[in-house]
Length: 174
Image (cartoon, rainbow, N blue to C red):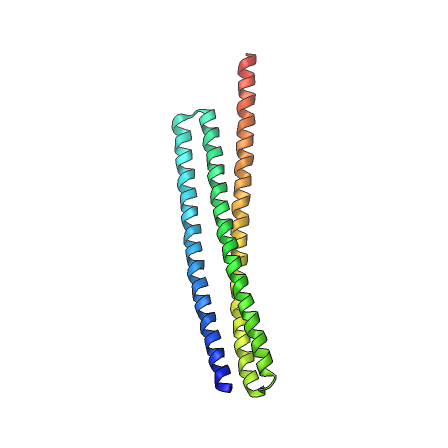
């Protein structure tokens, strides 16, 4: 029975390692996606700025800003969806760890020496989960920054639209 429980513990640790590696791959993919999005945003901003300078027309400038805001909103929505998917995976990992902990706790009540070794293993798993949680908080901060940037661009677009309307009113009055 002890060997059987040791085998189950090894399998659980192996499964946890596979889940952790899978999560790392997904985290790297998300980081690449965020990096690509930042690059695309910079490229779009540069392209919009060049277009504004070349054409020099207020209404075209306004449309470009609104298009950038829309594109940023779509990209933010995509990042939020990926964040939710990663959160779901993290929650499943935490549930798996909790189930493993409960099984181990029941088994450990009968085997004190094995209990000490397993407890050390559980502490390592907890540190790993906390590390993943820290990464999740970093993604949340980046998401908040993107949301703030979108709000700033919308505010700028609104101000530009108001200025254009005032300019048109002044021209009509003259």
